[in-house]
Length: 289
Image 1 (cartoon, one colour):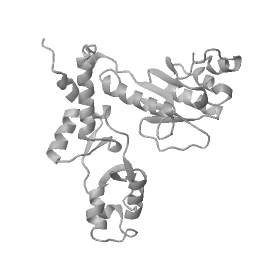
Image 2 (cartoon, rainbow, N blue to C red):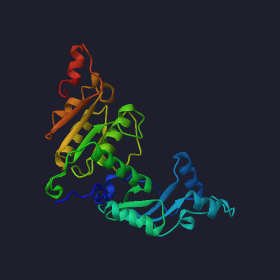
Image 3 (cartoon, rainbow, N blue to C red):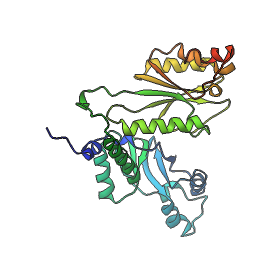
Image 4 (cartoon, helix red, strand yellow):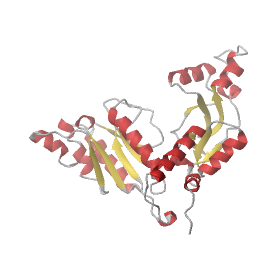
């Protein structure tokens, strides 16, 4: 049987493999002043208006210029529901890239809201679709292994234990790129990833949809709860990003409480490997090395 063109594989991928995390969301009653402030602070070109977890409209910079600032409307008494474009165009996460491209073309739009069971989970654009197409094209050129009867192969779900954006941390950025790259390049072999995010003392972050659980680095009981979450989930394998400073206890020893309780396979990425670690240091990495 002749090999299917690489683009047929790409067009059949689910939209969720290349969507961005959930866009900024506001309620219909939020004021135009608050919407502008939020978009400016977060450097966003769009917010989704959500009611009862369902998208009911979108507001773009163009909407604000044409419907608020241009006419000189009062920013404090004009609400999101007064200026939003509706109804929003959405696509369910399991629909294909081909479906998304067709919707973008026929609707003449540049952004497509991705939903799961009607609730907003992400956003995709022509550029994102181009990125995934190019990524798969390059993998084909490099001779990536062929997928044999992909529908019969169990798609692996991985959980990543790490810091994660928007927390400012080099390992957080590394993990985000790792998660996205595996999701793009191995889309037929993996399913939606799960991130267990490490929070520093007093840290509260506006994580994207990939973050399913959080650990307070300095609360040892939080590690036990994370292990319970992982064990009860459908995760197949855990990838632990190890760096002494992101885990609690002396030399990050609290991570042992997590690893000692996880009943799933664990793959560890060591970001710092000391040539001659002391005994206390070894205690902090003993369970993860």
